[in-house]
Each structure stands twice: as structure tokens, then as C-alpha cells.
Image (cartoon, rainbow, N blue to C red; front, top):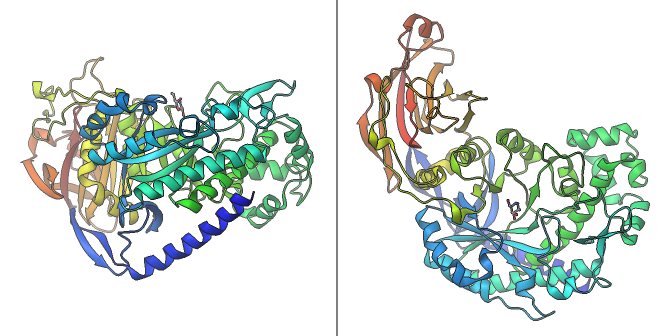
Length: 599
Ligand code: DGJ
């Protein structure tokens, strides 16, 4: 407890010092001009500040070395970072795949093999290798919990069940999950985590290789809807803590609907036991566990920030379609339904993040954006689906970044520059259409070229992300003076085996009548907004690429490359000319379009 209290004080002092620092230093800010990336001077340089989160315009962004930073990430497999030799060849592959950040497990069992004796050689090895390869790191602190269980806890913790008790199910059977109701366990984890953060500060506070920290991994109770250990039962019988009750009362009108519904059903009591306030059942067990996991992990995050204040986040094992209730998925983890509980219970944790392997990515993300929660995807897929997810997250949800899991397994491959990638309206693609490599690698290659531009457009909301499948094959985006009508690419002679199943695009509005679009397997038409003439025509379309932050045009596209339909009267009735942009399978590639209007 004392260590933790001292921790809180130190953290407060550090934050004060940081605030002072912000006032006296100068910043190089980013601005955008017609799609060119321009550096501007502002009067509060934070280039030496620690990586931190900052509200910029409409979004919260991660600031690294004074500049907004877009995480093009990937998480390695769970055991990969336990051996530096095993890791050695992986770094250069990830750098070549255009990642800028690697999410790496750091486990309690390996950093504190004996109580109080720390070994950070794996961390140091990762720092050195990441720097050599110009990569940043997000450390995944696997302490008390990983995927609900406690297999990454130190051996001396696992072996001492009396000092570090386990979760019990309703039959009193112990599960291999450390109970969140024991301060000895929480404090031991907090000491180890604080030691890690102290070490990171000592090794990295000037280089900023480490940019964020994940607290534990996919926490919650599996196998029961709540912990039934004696300490947990005692807590469950006590009144709901006043901190939570006060929050409910003060935020009654803005509570997320799932929580509000439970509280409404009991008549909105302002005090009482968990069942009196939220009702009797698994949903209440889940809230009870969420509060207690949040309290435990918030305290650990606090202790770590006291040593070195990096942004922290928690990742979530989200509800799967086959799950019947909490306990089938980790009960108490930060699923969207209990975000209010996590917000008030763990104020030292900055982001609540989903791990998304399910196909309904936009829907899940939309739930994680509520209440101003900044979006970051620590785990998802690679492949074409992953590329679509990355575009949607970054373009549509203002995400800080994206990270497929098992990144060392994705197939590297060259990015085929624009110019070799266009097929005509009526013909199949040429043989140069064939590219190797995972689509996420090609997508990261493209995103890395325009990351500063994307971040500037995120801030002023002049960006959109498009995510299409055969089931959800159209998406309209209203951006500036036009609606952009995207559809999955259909109008080529596709055979059943090569018809696209996924299409994706990113749109940046560069001017009143100008857009930069990047896409794969999509086409897009433009409908003007009133006032003004009702039909949008293409003034010019260029394919091209960004080289050293500058647009380098390729072919000027016209004719078959832009004509999407010839039923011109029907098109005119829809405010269209019949022409638009087409992106085929081997992207994503860039096109810049200027529009004009006629009556
Ligand atoms: C989600 C977990 O968070 C990861 O650590 C890993 O176990 C993956 N699932 C495996 O698919």
C-alpha cells in the first residue's frame, strides 16, 4: 500500500513537471496543403515530451516526439519474445513489411523470476533490436492475467496459493486465475510493473522507442460469471462503492444504454448492494467483476505511470456469437457494455480496446467509439479483411492505429507501384496484376507514405474509410461538397473464383472539388450536394504515388479506365456522368480526382 501511495504522489509530481515542460518548449506542427505534407511552426514545442495522448481537432491522437503518430503495428505470437535469438530474424522482416510499431509481450514470469530480483535482459534486447530497425514498441504487460488465466504470473506467485489466492467458481473449485480481490497479488504485480516502467524510463526516456503499454491481456473470469472466493463473496455482499454510485448519479443522462437499462430496471437506487442496484443475475456479476478488475488494473497502471508515464490501454476478448453469457467470454473484461464501469474504476487507463477477429468489424468499432473512447485495435487480422479493417479504423473511426496478431507469419511481398495495376473497364487485368505478399503489407506500405496527411485529416474530419464485403457491398460517404458512392468492384468479367469478397478504400478531401482516394476492389461515383449544378463530372483523374511526402503523378486516367457505365440518362437522373474511379485487386493504389459540375 505504501509503495502505491508513494507512487501516486510521484506520478502527480511528474505530471506537474510535464505540464511545465509543455509550456516552455516549441513544437513543429503538421499542416496540409492540397495533399502536400507541410511542416509548420507552432509555439508549444513538445518534441522532447514523452509519448502521450492529445486531443487534436476531432480525435485523440498519440503524440510521439512532438508529432501525431499513426501506429502501423503488428503483434507477435505469445511466446516469440521469450528468446532473443528466436526474435532476431523477425525484426528486419517487420521493418521491411512497413510496420512502424511491434506489440511485444513482456511477462512477469521472465522479468521477476525471483521475488524482488528483476531481469530486464529481454526488454533491453528488444529495445536495441527495435531501434536498429527503426521500430517502436508497445509492451504488453502480461502480469496477473493473460486471456483470463494467470499462466504468465511469476513462478513464485503461481506456487503460493495461500498468499495469492485463485478465483473460485460457484462450487468452490479453484480456477487457474488469480483473484482480483487480494491486495497482496495486486501490490506484487504493481511492484513488478513499476520496476519495468522504471527500467524503461532509465533506458528509453530520451529515445521513445516504447510508445504505449498494454495492461495485462484480455482479462476477466472464464468458467464462471464471477469470482466466488471468500474475499469476492464478501465484496459482493457489501454495498456498491460510493465512487461508482456517485458516477452513476452524476452521469445518469449519458450512461451507455446497456448499463442504464439495468439500473433503470431496479428504479435507479443511489445506494445498495450489487444485486439491489443492478438486479440479480450474470449481468450484475459482470459489472461487479468489471469494477474490481478496473480497480486492480487501474492501481497497477498508476504505479507504473508514477515511474514513467506512458499511455496505457486494456484489450478485450469480446463476446463471441456462440457465447451464452459472461464466463463463456471473460466476465468483467472491458466489453462495450461495461465501459462506464471501467472509465470510473480505472482512471489511470487511457484506452479501452477491442481485439477483433469477428467479421462485423465496423459495428464492433462503433461500439468502442462511444463516450469519446479513442480507438486502437491491438489485435485483429491481416489479409484482405485486415487491410479493410485498417482502412476503416483509421479513416472512419479516427484510430490511433491497427495491429494484426501473429504478424511474423504474414507473407512479405513487394508493393507493386501504381501504373502496372490498372485493367480496363471491359478487360481482365494484365499479367502484371499479380502481386505477392499479404494485402496488409501492401496497405501498410501505402499508409506509411501518407501517415502525416492522414493524421492531419483525422483531426479536421476530412477523411473517410470504406469497408465492403459481398454482403455489405455499398457504402456512401458524405465528405465536403459531394457524396462518394462506393461499391465493391463488380463490372469486370469476374469468374466465381476471382470475384472480390472484400473491397476497401480511404478518402481524403483535399479541396472543395478534389479527393485523394486509395483503394482495392472498389469503384466510386460522385454525387454533388446542393447548391449548384446537380451532376458531377470528372475534370481529371491521375494515378500516382507519394514519394518523400510529395505527389508524383503516373498516368492520367480516362476512357475505359474511368467509364463505369454507358446508360447515361439513368446516370444523369442520379446526378452522375457515368464515370468514376475504379480500383482493382492488386492495391491499394492511389488516385487523385478533380471534379466539376454541370446541369
Ligand atoms: C487473443 C489473445 O489476446 C492473444 O494473446 C492470442 O492468444 C490470440 N487470441 C490467439 O488467437
